[in-house]
Length: 86
Image (cartoon, rainbow, N blue to C red):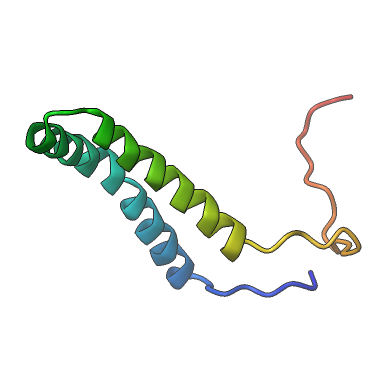
């Protein structure tokens, strides 16, 4: 394959674990944070603004960080054998 790996072996597993644990923070923190904002302001609309801002920030980060695939790049790897008869 012509690409390169940023992390390999145990480092890749650690990176995946870090991303997974950061992804699990949102559902753990969001209910408390939205409840606090609603209790403080007396209006749940501001909590909705927080969720919308988080989605917009996530989308913007994806557009900035993720690079588009090169359609001219050909993989040197053979197709994976599934064992299913066609």
